[in-house]
Image (cartoon, rainbow, N blue to C red; front, side, top):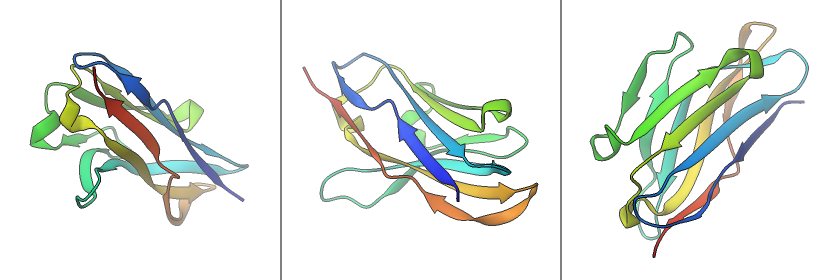
Length: 120
């Protein structure tokens, strides 16, 4: 059984930083393409950043230059470094991952979500 675990959310002042992580646990399981999404109250879930298995990245225009997505394949973990945070970044952040098992595609998973609140 695979577990996809997110952590790193919290309360931060405008201009501050947070780092989210998304890790896959379980024997033989790994991460392929991963995306970070967010959903603010009353709004649709939106893609914030994505990273392929090869390390190619893409970002929403609203976070370009402030957020960085990266991965550590040895740790089966993808990170989202968020700098210069703004109140409008407040949302629940979700990790979505294509999971592999013994190198082959297994299935797509959503993480449980982690709250990010940017407020003074």
